[in-house]
Amino acid sequence: MKNMFLIVFLSSLIFSQSSALDKTFQSMDNGNFKNALSHLAIVISNDPTNPELFQLKGMLYESLNDDQNALQAWEECKRLSNNNSLILEANNHIQLLKQLK
Amino acid sequence: MKKLLLLISFFLGCWQAPALDESYPFTHVGSIHLQPIHDYKHFSGSGEIIKNSMTHSFMKLGYDVIENKNGGTEIVVGDGLNTLHFTCIISDYTDKEVMVIPYYNEDKGYTETTVSQSTDGGEKESSQTDISTSTTTHSGNVQKGSRLEYIRARVGLMLKLHEPYTGKLVWSHHYWYSGLDLAQTADMCTRLALHEFRKLF
Image (cartoon, rainbow over all chains, first blue to last red; front, side):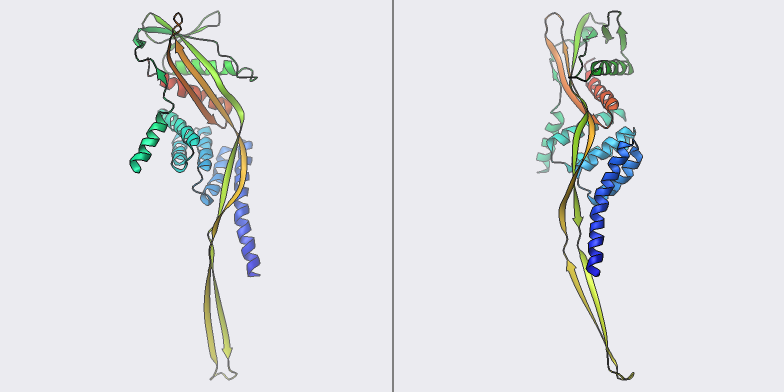
């Protein structure tokens, strides 16, 4: 019984992760970027070192014209990434967002 | 090691610096003629969108923009007599770039504590209660989860400034920008491009 609970608990954790990301994309498809950000926050709390999640966060904030939070997200993306292409992309965004400040 | 990382990030930051003919007297330039911008592949209207975004950005930067009757566009950048031609090629214009997010599930493990209690003896006075506790720690692991995809926009621009008669190239640069909305991404890409351009005049 105890094992059963454990399996249910662990699978619910995994499910909640993918389902939160699914909900993020659903909200994006509906154009509800604020809602997408709240779902993305759950995904990031479970996977806080994933630069691709911060890349998405940066773009969502940019779509909402929230330059300050977008800048923070892109800086975090750059810090966590070891992929040159993603670092270059982050640099482009950081450069423009700093100009807009 | 820290210095090396700083040096690497510095070079990465400069990777996209424009090419510039430093001997060219930019102060002698009075106007720039914006050449027609062709559509990107089969994306009808993309050239016109980028052109409008450029003229809008030039105006926001404080330059005078003159649209001639023959469809030409002139940007007044100074009092000089020289003229330069400004060419823009759209190297990327899509709202269908597929992005993949690999995500991970971290199983942090768990601790299991079992408390056993047994009562021995029938009579109340002589009964004995044994309590034993055992703790088992199960280690966790990080598992690669699934990959989820989303679609985003990406716009790339190749820009060139050259002398109309000699054909001499005096400045060139390549930019690209990404975002969730194509129109906004195109606008941001143009803004980024023209901010560098502003350092010349």
